[in-house]
Length: 135
Image 1 (tube, rainbow, N blue to C red):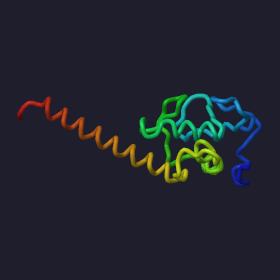
Image 2 (cartoon, one colour; image 1 turned 180 degrees about the vertical axis):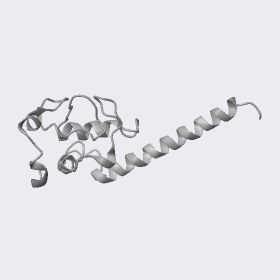
Image 3 (cartoon, rainbow, N blue to C red; image 1 turned 45 degrees about the vertical axis):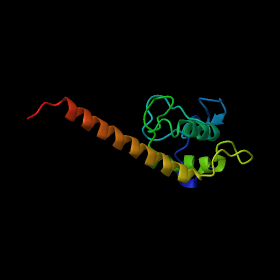
Image 4 (cartoon, rainbow, N blue to C red; image 1 turned 90 degrees about the vertical axis):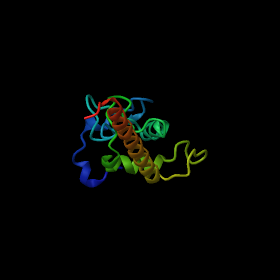
């Protein structure tokens, strides 16, 4: 259920969307964040949870599977977070594949992304120092 404050922003076209992965009914408002570009490409909650989990920890930063934009984990729509909390963890409540809460998972992804960026920055600096001649 959408919060009352946001309900006024929803029209029939938003509600009548289909999940780009499983084709289940969803809303165009459920995208992976404000960074997504192009035509709306929403995923249902279950597909979103499975997508996010499948990308971690191998591919931080997480990127939208459709438009390849980085997922802005700090600015996921609140109504999406509420829905994802309902369908978390991946594998469902019968066969959960993690004991992390959704919010613990998001923090772990942010930490792993920062670590990867720091490592890439050090590698670039070392390469630059190796290729520069003495001054």
